[in-house]
Image (cartoon, rainbow, N blue to C red; front, side, top):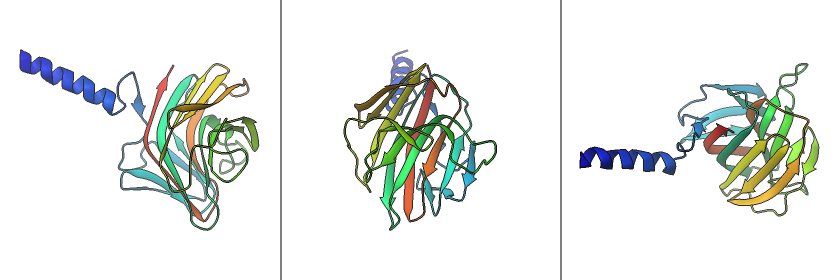
Length: 196
């Protein structure tokens, strides 16, 4: 009986350690892009257990359609001569008139070289919710967590909340990654979401 109890405790502890506790659901199996849809001209692939986007502008959409949601992951952008710019989209859809265009929805910005930097909340082409400070650098991994419940949207970078904003325009949609341009790499790993 003690062995079964210890095994149970180990499994529960491991599930929390690796992001499976508290109803977190993995968006990425670490091996391929099953349950993801590629839009645009960027090349998306799996490399060493992470999603990598490069080559051009494009988006990678995950399967679940969500409303009130929390999303977390680890990200890195690398400037290869074209400037590095990416994003984590949520409550978004590809435009009906141009599925390869920019998503209609919210974006948690990933960019270290502009005024509306990593952690800012964007709506299509427009910085909307201001991040308090820039905590990231090109070439370095960082964690990002986004929580959208009703009109309340919050973004954390490396465990520190940088953005708090209210907006009601987009109420549901998909989760997506962005590679903004050529001459860069967008990388993501340990991607999870949970419905609230």
